[in-house]
Image 1 (cartoon, rainbow, N blue to C red):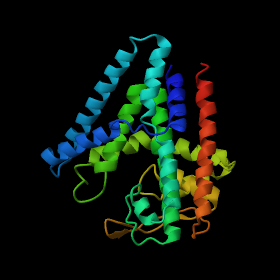
Image 2: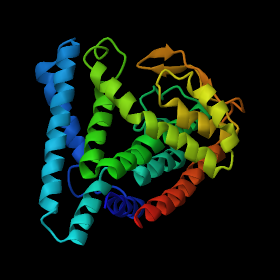
Image 3: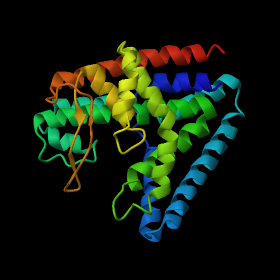
Length: 297
């Protein structure tokens, strides 16, 4: 049943993409985080745990209620309803279109600032393209593989709770003075939730490129990343494109020392980004076949 729901969700995201006629649930999650932070923020892990546990609890309960309500309908209508709702939490098409918008924009730095957390105003063209590839590779996991992974394992409540964890991390999971304690549990939960999917993402990138023999090398580069997960898809993409990604990057006005991922060319071109996106398109085909096979069982 979960595979059928995942197939519907995946196809809707691939064809339709983001629903813009209503406020996205992830935005509502963000609104709750802002509400909690504004009223209850304290430089405390305990206060951060209350934020984490409250949003996760609310998300789980609402998702469970929706599942129970949908189960009252005939079987295939139940699957259709949950498939449509689950598609809202996938964002591969939106991710791909956002990167393409950067490439086609006359003001690439401004467009890029909408999809990355690094400072963009002083980036040269090669650095802009590098940021595009890095964010595309990393978010192949966050926007597609991880949500599908938890949807296949736990159904609708799985994908909803995963997106709640991911949203918490994206808003308060930073290692800054303000969030180091307050966002501690949110960041750790995201690390745990993304652990297996990130490695699956890297494996699939190499598999589609017919370079699975590079997986051991990918792991060696990925381990240099401060995140236990982000380095895997980034390193895999760097290796299949024969590029060197990563390196020192400016965040919030300060240069952050970062390892390099891959041992190829350091100057990045627009065509490199297009190649990365084309691998993502093949990613689509591979997942479609995999989830389709799952529907047979």
